[in-house]
Length: 298
Image (cartoon, rainbow, N blue to C red; front, side, top):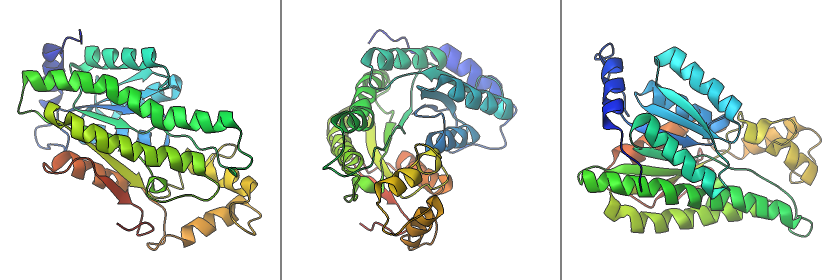
């Protein structure tokens, strides 16, 4: 690959930080996590929780300014050199390759990659513009492929140097990757496809010491994917007429809350419980794990 694994930098940073924190060992203590799509919503929550649990975090996003602000917040809370931000367009392979190179240069290696990038363009299949369908596919599906392609090369080299080492690639998928979604074919199709990629990557990359799994959250109502006043799902679904009789965004929200048996939307804590499970367990790969409050059962 041509990416030197900067062990001395990683160890010196880790050692200086851990000296004052020996009393508590985090669940990902000493690991390096690359979170792609980290400038808000689920990706931001994952990045902050990883840092809380002892990881070095690379926050990658097309919105570099926002990702950098979150990285600065992490460094202020948990100490210097805990997080950096990198700008990346996941649909541009050169930028993806450069992102991976910068991540390795910064922290020496990559133990965990989380792909938490996703957009929605809702609407009837009879009316959806081709450019909307293609955009959703490029970001949700092709971008995942490109990031795994380049991260897996680094992880495979790490495994060659340390054959007992195991690493994790995790896609943040969706309950829409487990069942169809009315007037939302582009998104659901890209998420179904993402599970196909996850299963196929899992079979291939096992020999490289890489587990590949997908987490399928239910409705994370408080993140920008749902609540953005201009582009969020609530407003999109209202305009698309996806909820019969809905007149306001709150009507749409109440409708979706009523569909969850547990009576609430998904929270970052729920998602993190699933993420730590796939990292800590030693026997599963290629899984798509629902975190839906009982809305989708497997």
